[in-house]
Image: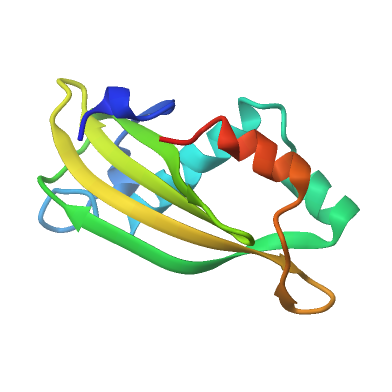
Length: 140
């Protein structure tokens, strides 16, 4: 897996508050990095997620998160998160993610699965056509 495999790239830097007693990024922060890259994918397509939730009454529910650690990130290290859609279901979106050091070395991979849900009915619903179209552009 290489950074160029992903349609979305988001550069970041490890902050002091993200490291643990071992001097490396605490594991839970990788999910935050993934979430940030996914949000940047929407921002890059002029999608205001909170606005669409208010308008549609639908949001995504996280049903799976997976992180595989390859090598640690350290304080003040620059890195890039790659994101792309690996699968579009009727009501689900599966995101593939990668964390890469500035030199291109793969540090972690991830998978996030969302189910689009009607918040009032509290059940899955088909992806809105505009959403399907927007994320289809991000397919790997």
